[in-house]
Length: 213
Image 1 (cartoon, rainbow, N blue to C red):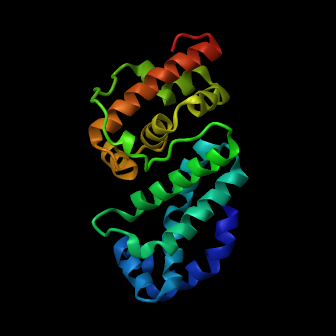
Image 2 (tube, rainbow, N blue to C red):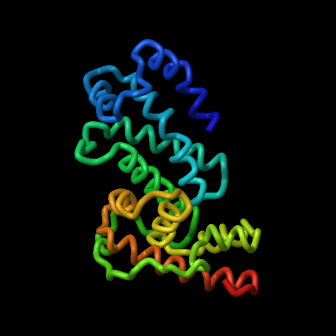
């Protein structure tokens, strides 16, 4: 994250020292930015850049590309800040912008079309309970097989809607409610997608490694 940090570090240090921003809520900072104190946006960048970068990296698997996409996401968030709905959490809003930026990046890079999270056809889905099978957890599979490349390859092979659910919930550790807000779908849809993504990952990992997972 050095690219973004170099741009905002001097602004952030000045802002937090002079304004005491450490304990200030996100919405209060958003309000300051909208009121004309644009430098305060650097505080939000500093708070969430690492988490956003981590999520984006699980899409593109290239650190340089992930830095560029993360920076693009924050630029878009700054430009669109007046459209931010204060009834939502800022971090789920920036996650959504970043995930869509990553999908757009993959759409340009791949010959096959990628599915944007804004596609209305994914707002409805059936309900499936979350699997309690330990083998359905990709993190446990990773720990057992010690094969990061196999897991990354399997995640990359998922459709965008399933990959988004599994990355945000199982890899990034966000709650089902948080993922639902980011993806703009019901919680039941998140549960269904996570369950189906885990099932597909079990199959893909078994095909790649020859192990029963």
